[in-house]
Length: 136
Image 1 (tube, rainbow, N blue to C red):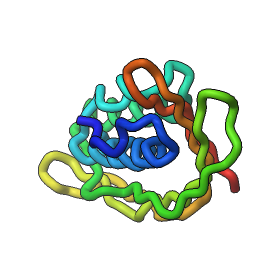
Image 2 (tube, helix red, strand yellow):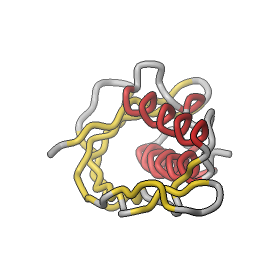
Image 3 (cartoon, rainbow, N blue to C red):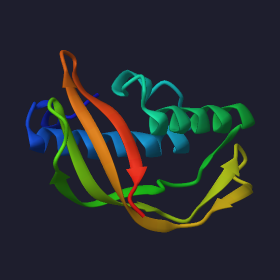
Image 4 (cartoon, rainbow, N blue to C red):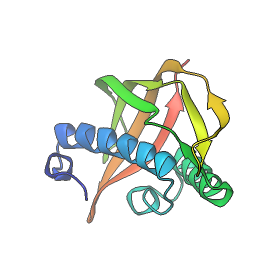
């Protein structure tokens, strides 16, 4: 499941993990699928909890995003507490429609790009996503 590049306990592995995690957000919303994010998330991650709840609500309603909506751009490693790796990363929420199981539009998400700070930590079972917060 986790790509090989994201399994290394290095800054490069941490960045690969962040990008993989954001790709899983797309999968959670386009499928929709629950349970993808919690095994890779820290228990205190608010972003993770909200994103999982969004996937759960989409599934419950029989809706899904019509296409991938989250795209990660340039990233820069920034200082972090010991045992963690943090990045400032450009994330784009692309404009996308939310559709029902028949493909009919039920909602529309506006697009936006912002710089965010993300954190990950290395554990005995690999990287865990700590949180994502807006810098704007």
